[in-house]
Image (cartoon, rainbow, N blue to C red; front, side, top):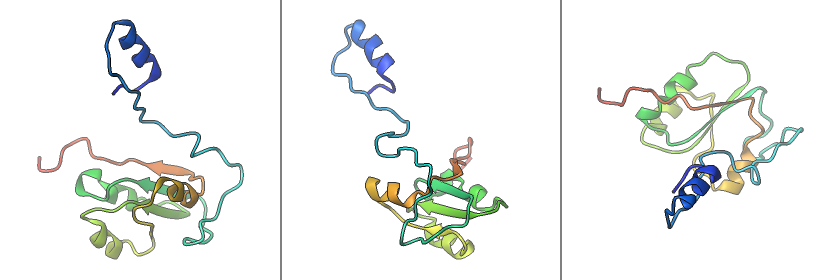
Length: 126
């Protein structure tokens, strides 16, 4: 697995075999730009701006740093994990949508103003 098409081509030129492109970016075919905010019916109309976290709801993701931010608008968490129940109790104003398949995830994302990836650089347990 290689991260980009250019790396794939470079390795193929050096005669590497059985390579597959596996990008870590946004699937622009699925998550295309929309100039108009969409409404995901289960969430209703969200106050803007929308801050979004997508990922496993676990200690090492440091999601508490995201949820503690004092920002206007709405916060949405898309994911499940071992600290989900505790965080739901602590942050009742956050919109929790759980684990969604890709098309449903796209539908629930009202193009966010901010998306978050607050993982701590220090592994848990250190």
